[in-house]
Length: 476
Image (cartoon, rainbow, N blue to C red; front, side, top):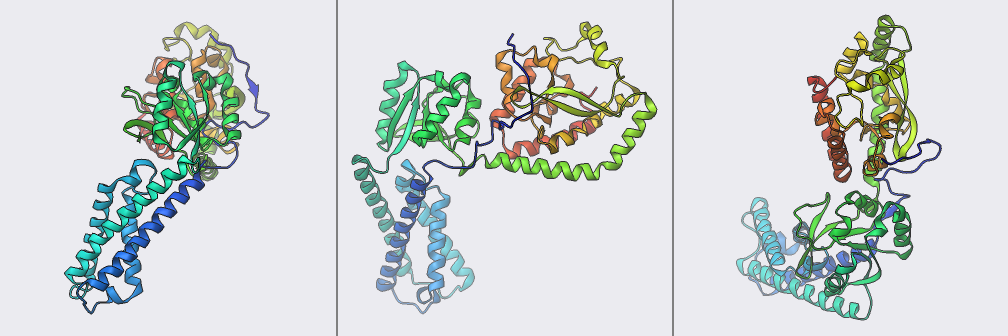
């Protein structure tokens, strides 16, 4: 077992998914420069191709050859199709000549279709169309080739190279350095082993990466496979994470495949504004908690009256729970048990239905009142936690905050769930709720949520929560 001190909420330390201050994606300026340069080259190539087609093609009295807005439409469509095919991305994508040919040809077909619908008898002659199509392909490919040659020449002189950091095991270091150097666009500014990502070293590692202006981090699979949640640290630091070759079929959340030369690697790209998704989540929590508190006021009043009529004691139950970064806070619930319930729990431990004993769950708990059973069945006892959400102590969706008694039985691997804000509902709750009788299974669901978190996942869990509550699945 691992012991840990639980601190009161006296200072703010951000959620794992929240950036420590607003931070723009590292290396964004160079990426924007690349995209702007490629778009300028493609636009120039298309204008030259259009001019040649008009000059040498068979003349036709058509607004497409005489009015500037139609040329702008042509350029916008061509550039738009090229962009949607991902041909302005870094690396092999900008040199994907078959892809460029397909994109330009598709845009030409779409132009024909648009012209037919707009003015079926007056587009351009067949010779003009064919010259424009062929010359567009030739000039764009030439422009991309010259850009590639110029880029390689500048990089051999040490310009426009991305500063990176390599994290790998000693036995793989030489092989991984060779793989990175093949791409000839990186400068390795530091190398470390997997220990730099351990909890005790993590803060200093990311502080170093920030000070050095690291744009991308290359991490071996063996260094990160048991620490996938560390991906959030790179994500919120605005650093693109590239996971070096692995034969494993496991694919981390948010990852895409990317090539270094001919070697496939997994990449977790950095967001444009680090932590923006989390702050959208916080704004959503704040707005929803205020709206729901106002709308549900009559329900609160009715429940309060029923609790008072059913049994003596307070309306609300406030209990110390362990929240973000293992800090204590008071959770709000409608009282569903007799007033001395916590004292009676010691006598009921032998009847605990959770196999490993970390949590305490009992289906027919004698401490629950008549109204309490109804409130628990429909999860109405959780409604006051909207106050905790409003205060920023909780979120609508996240791992459930547990009592001190449960957290004291944690082992080290369980504490990852304390790195994010606790929630009213979560993946655990919509995947079985109280029917899950093994704490390890519940922790796996919490870790799965942390690793795969997105705004869309939160919305899915909220919708599933409504379904689970109405069906009374696993509620007692």
